Image (tube, rainbow, N blue to C red):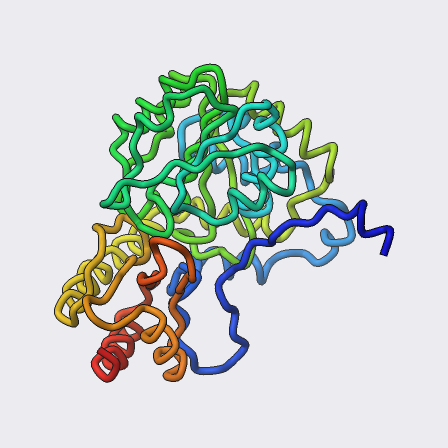
Length: 350
């Protein structure tokens, strides 16, 4: 068909399975196993449906922006809010990665990065993690068109010390550097303080993991006001009303209840510590995780076999048929009860 010559063809991102089946244990997409803050449910019940006939407010003018600014002690003009961190990152690719030089990111990392690069026709180059699945800052000291990496990295869960993050930013002052901190609340130290020192740094976070609002799709970037203005210029050129009213209202409550947020993160980290012990007993090895998942490989049983047999037991984890990581499983940290069910199933498999 002649018209296909003008179609933009890409290999799409493949998300984790979303089985629509009752009674499963879903440990494959890094969702928080605990409910959102209690104020979220109250705000949802009290939301006036009349508001939904109107377009939503611009995100940077809302109580959500004010709540985030107060929480992080920055200005509302230093925050860009989007439809999940995926939307935020997509806008960043479209806005800042416009050089003829390649954008750098790790070879084992969030698998959406190369998809966005292909969609937007951005040249890119992956930098191999070392044998311990760690990022090497020296790999990012060559001429490039931008740098992006998660910290903690996904799917490995490894966290990079702030000194190494700064080393990468400091050596790339002529491009924008993006630190994707989707999992930072589970044991890492945020690079956010560095945005006052470096005008080329964006720090991206999300409500999907530590704040239990994956279904609301709220993400945000933080940086110097000029970076945020450029992002808004592009966003409003694509869609002026990206955030829905419900998300803007409920997101506020997720930010305000600091005690609930900290308790949820604490519970997940405690369960992760026990999971490391239980998996090690069963012959698994894994890098030290500072995320809400463990990236594990069994000493003798292939990862794909474990993955398939767990599915037969209605337990879903994540497996990739990719070079270097095809023998690893990414196991989301669930509730203690869910993890006990996982251990029982593993006892029958390994």
